[in-house]
Length: 321
Image 1 (tube, rainbow, N blue to C red):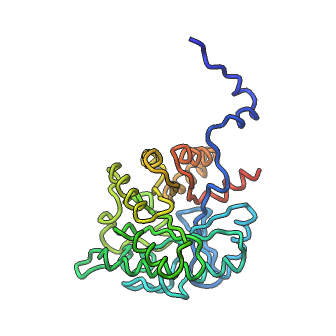
Image 2 (image 1 turned 90 degrees about the vertical axis):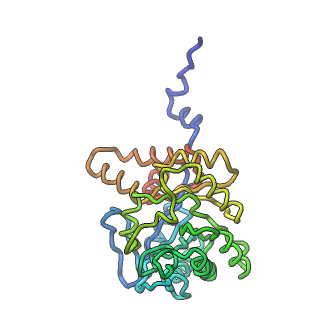
Image 3 (image 1 turned 45 degrees about the vertical axis):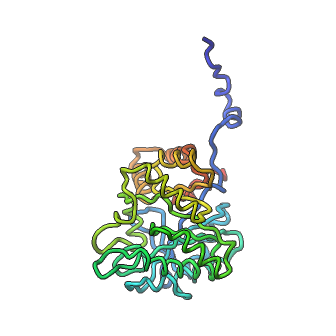
């Protein structure tokens, strides 16, 4: 039996020529945390190198992102006031609505995607409206989620990304957007969002930890794989343009299965806990920084077309040489 020749491994230029998986700036979405207040640029203690920005400190960051060649950002808002209906989430002058308009006034080179959920805006920290017994009311939540989606589109968002995991929310938002004249606004749905322990640093960053209970009644059981395929199929049937798997690293098998099953763009969220885990290992000298590129390429190789990652700026600098 003939051995496979290894000549292609000798020259780095040849290796690049035949490389099966590559990563480009067009594959990356960079999350941004926007907070109410003034003169705020504060590092998030559990996400070293990631910051919360007030609107007046945002311009410098936006210019850096554009100069690095990053084309897409995903916005998360941290309001000053919270209530049981998350009313700041759909306020015309809410933090995300103001951030969209601010970014659009700074540059026309960024594609602005907005997270649509209620956990950052509700006093109880859950992703929907609660009923009298303390459970999330799915149908009532849809009404408010629709209002949030429309308000983001009215402020100038280029895409919305519902992360609430309420049943039927993609169809409801698609109908609301269409009825308000936003037929051109795509939906990137958090289709298979697991009830994961990897979200801890994000909950600190966004102030979105639930005040009681957990989110297992509406987020997915991390033991389940077939359920993810059903959830993705439902979102596609309801009108999702892009489906998302979240988290990424512990769910590479789900990314692969969705890729094999459906002909639709797939986003994977390289979440806060995954970022913090690698960042800490690098800072402690346990791993080399090259592990970041290796990790993101693994997510891409598994089948993701898009990667949402806090490493986007670091990767952009490496890709830019």
